[in-house]
Length: 134
Image 1 (cartoon, rainbow, N blue to C red):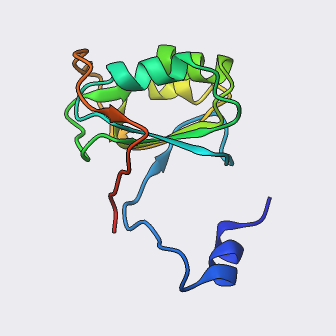
Image 2: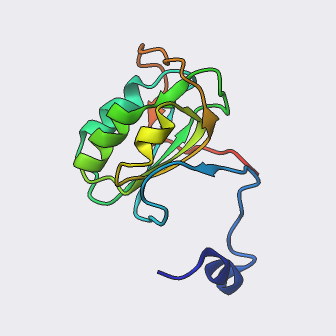
C-alpha cells in the first residue's frame, strides 16, 4: 500500500484533501476499499443496518454533521462491521467504547468520543453524496 502523501503528490491538482482532523480509534490503522456513504445526524440506525450487510472490504463514510453530542458507533456495531467484512469507517461525528474498538480488527476514524447513545429513528440517507472538511 502506498503512502497517502505519495498518492497525493502523484495526483496533486486532481484530488482534494480533508481539512477535518480525524482521530484513529480502530484496531486497523491502514485500510482502503470501495466507499459506501451514510448521512445520519445523531441517529445511527441506517449506519447500523448498512454494517449488517456484507462489506466485501468496503469503507463507510459517515456524515454525522460533525456532531459529537452522541456517538454513532460503539463496540457492538464495530464488531459487527469487522465480522461482516468491512475494512473501516470514517465518521464525521463521535464514537463510544473507544478502548474496546481499539481491539477490533476494523479501521475507525472519528472526531472524538462521547458515551451518549444516538437516536434510532432511521433518519438520513444511504449511498448519497456527502461532503465535509473542504
